Image (cartoon, rainbow, N blue to C red; front, side, top):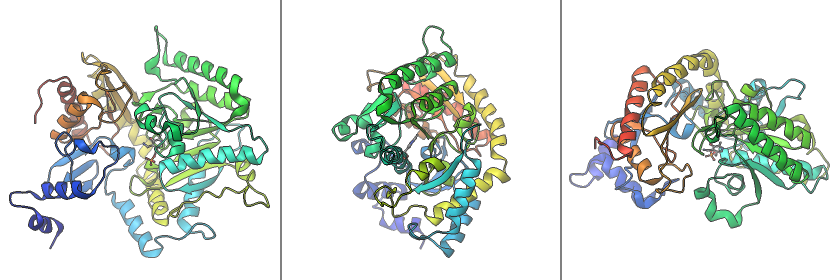
Length: 475
Ligand code: PMP
């Protein structure tokens, strides 16, 4: 008996298999990033049976374009056969092994490949070591702890703080939340969070009085310079999301900021942590966003697209210098951080398959054409009366609607406020999974998205904006 037949039997009279799954889900599953009270009536729960390239197929047979690449992970499309095959092959060989004291082929090969493609900077020692973790937030924790611990080992015990940017997001664990600046996510937990300093964001949307994106970047960098001049000797690292502050509303900045930030960190002896968890692996048009500024960080956090969106895995790349700072006879001076699934062979095999796809399909070059098609469709929104900004970096387009500050606290939180909810529902009803960030609708599609899907995306976005402002809905 297949699963759907089984469900039909379990379903109550008149209940479809999809409804049966919804009911069973809500009996037992607590969903992430969700006010569960909004299910099932305000927020439709979508039971998904399978994935296929840029599409998700519901249990009722309906197809949904995954315009958000399932939380920005699924770069090559769903159920990619080459990744699936690599995982299956690895699962039949070695599904997992403790990475403390043991090693395995996929971990070593993946570390070598990541080091080979990592961003480089002239006159700077390259990233040379890889520490594995198993999700983005864990990767951020690793980078923060490493930076702090390195200074401690070096006897610089005053350096206990981090600088992060306003509007930033680095994950939900307590360390990552402490360097995030989205009030709805962090406010409740504030008493538990380590104190961080927040520097003004270089966000080009915040430019004033005819200021260019580049001028805005320099103004923010000047503010960072002043902050570091005052507090520099108590800081261990600056953490930032290069080029796009994603969860903060797909806010984009000029690469000049990254160059200035790199110089300032060097001038103050502070590490630069680049969180490329969302933007790494081709999303911004280059393999890594840092490349567009010609800089290399001291610590580079990768996850999400690392495995092509198939399995949870994170990697933190760092320099020989940082690695050497932990070599000692004392175990306490070692980096003892560990997770049970660190360097899981299935995840590493999936990541290697994903990197092979970049080579065999020439993904970065192909994305240039796809990004152009996104730009053509995004252009039509520039004159929309409800749209205040249309921006794009590579394979990310953001369409910012006029503000709805009364409906939420003005920060970009997923499906916040009635407007976001209406836009989301309208898009889902038309077969597109489009999760607004506050007043920002964005396109973050799998790289394999086809022309028809692009047309559907643009058309649905227009209708979602209408619906957000109380216009016609198709439901
Ligand atoms: N950093 C950034 C920039 C992110 O966008 C995210 C997730 N959206 C994270 C860290 C946290 O990753 P995870 O959800 O895998 O913990």
